[in-house]
Image: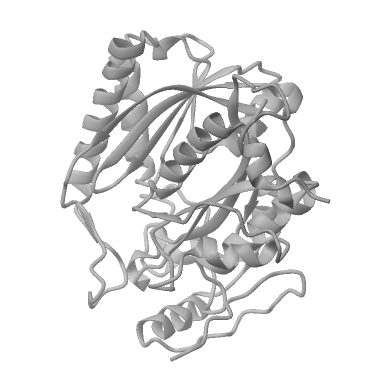
Length: 369
């Protein structure tokens, strides 16, 4: 007989841990892409301006729900022996296709039908919803001593001229005590109401309404505010961290500006201090260079604007390999005509189902019309 979630919520069955964070994570990304060179040859500055090598391509049978289901399935199969141990499941997104039900509701179909005591719904905000879900779930774990799952999932649909900004993926994180990536309680945030990034529901364009210069300014202001607040409120010296991971949703040139700016505001960086834009890349780089990276800063940012700075400790003996690079290497490249057909179908609300399917994956099953 499985232990009910109410039993372990009391935390009486074992000694409560003092460390909480990410125990394991798995990634899903579509199996198709278009190369930056193909976009460049069609007048889209994907490599020169955005620093892209390729961008993801998906059709109408993949969405934020199906991608989340694929990521969570991998997490359950590889890292969670008892699904009844999960007491919270929370999602961060800005691209749910169901305007009533949460993505979390769909994910419940991956659990035993008699395990219904799983809290959590969706957090909706551009680029930041996943951070909110992670903070909420870690706080819940600290309170209960239990285990949860956090999912970040999005599809960045764009007009054809803005295809260099395209992207889609889902990350599922197993969260709880004695983690691989220990997220410390000290954190600071910067929230404002800005108008640099909007996605009106009835807009006549697919691409979000963006004011890139204003977004860059808000990003820098939020970073300044968070670094100063972290030192003032908690005496955390960010210059002493081994590495920094940033939200990198803007162009490659701007991220270089962010790096130079951060070096200035922390009064110079130690020689072993590196910057990254996702954890899996940092993990691979550290392994290849045989470096020891133990302490990291995590800066989450969403236009509109939302920002949080956290710090974490990596427990290398509890880690595992994330196969994101392998998935990216194995993607099949599509033509510009195929991408154009998919984008046009999206604009006309058509059902563009033209990419090959895999037997091992979940696909969209929402009713049409």
